[in-house]
Amino acid sequence: MGLPKPSLEEMLHPAAAGGREERDGVRIVAVADLPTRFGEFEVVSFRSPEDGKDHAALVLGDIGGKENVPVRLHSECLTGDVFTSLRCDCREQLELAIEEISKRGSGALLYLRQEGRGIGLENKIKAYRLQELGLDTIEANEALGFRADERDYRVAAGMLSALDVRSILLMSNNPAKISDLQAHGVRIAGRIPLEVSPNPHNAKYLETKRVRAGHLLQAPRWPPMREQLDCLHTPAGPSEG
Image (cartoon, rainbow, N blue to C red):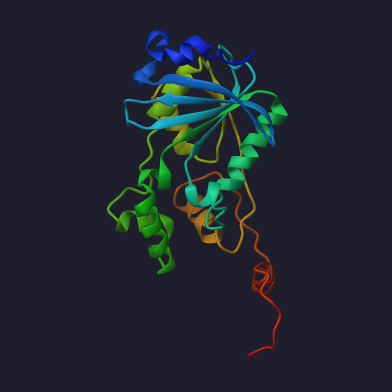
């Protein structure tokens, strides 16, 4: 069944159709089918007066009025989600979440336009350079004048309200998401971990999230340095001693 889709008449005359306005004015403005390599989903576009941005959701099944809906809050990451950066775990978490929702037969992935933990793409790339100069991900944000995490999940709460989701199983390793969503009235019935294996490029990033940001991650068990270097697939050549 899924979400109701607008008719041709409603598409041609959107002013007459209106939109479903919910908490904080977040409303659904467009719905369509979206076949993916993970299965047949619906893609939903939301308009938020809170930040003036268009947010999206990938929805599987009839989740309206349901309890214990598997939900992933995924903040936009151009470098990871699109360019497959190895500096973070964003794309891997995105795909794991979609796979898990597909396996469970229903759920939603909320795609939030909060690039770089809310500091924007320009500042995120500046933070990358600061990390190359020795700062960790939190120190880099703070050096640019931001908090460690500038995200706000008020819009996500409004999106869940617009989808008429009664309670969720949050797919996250971040306790701050739990407390923030609860502060905005979202009922969280449980948590689904989304851990990925570290690589040589994001090991420090993940360890910073675990130790300094309190993310619920396993302590890494890294192979010897020789094996780490082998993971980079460096072409074989003569030793330089």
